[in-house]
Image (cartoon, rainbow, N blue to C red; front, side, top):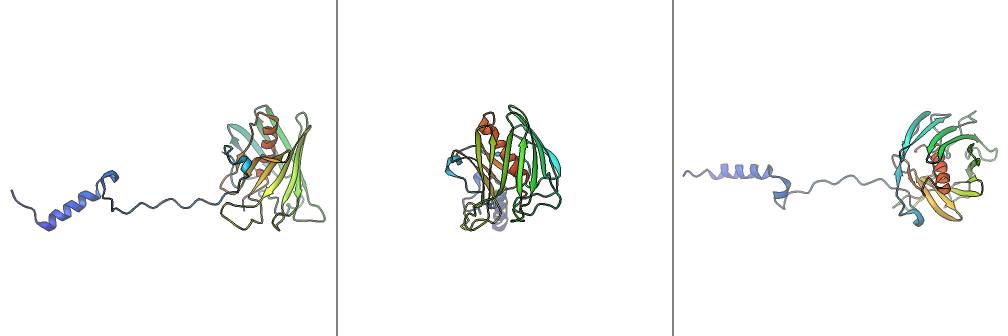
Length: 232
């Protein structure tokens, strides 16, 4: 039997190794490159860190549109192509937002008004009302500075239920808080019961069961805040 030239055999051997599936390649093969490092996310309060997260909508909402939140349709109409509580309210805009959420307990329709206090032109106030009984109201505006930065604080009220709202400014792995909100925390009786993370490509919500009164309040508040918080 003829022997192959050494150089030719070596070439064939190398070609065979290159075409081998990953499971039988040489351990010395170079590792594949990993995925790009994930973007920082909002720091979650310990009380909601283990709650399942739901994504919805988009980073920047248009003048009008719709999306699904856990299979429930949300339709919205905004008074400007860009809205952000940490930016001035567009001139002459009295009704920045209307939206309808097909909630588990029936449709939830909100009409939101906005105005700019004379004392703080950057910190416009948002006030929303839901007409379904009992009527509900949300209001949020300039709050107590946190970490030397301006924040937004407010409350949602329906009957005897009151939900506190406050902006969040810290990202995981970042020592310095962000000037604009990276999300919002929602508090019930002094404890954070839900969070809205606005730091990524789409809003992410951690909430109680939306079929409960508390979960409904959280969802209505979170949808409102997401729709007036375009990404920066």
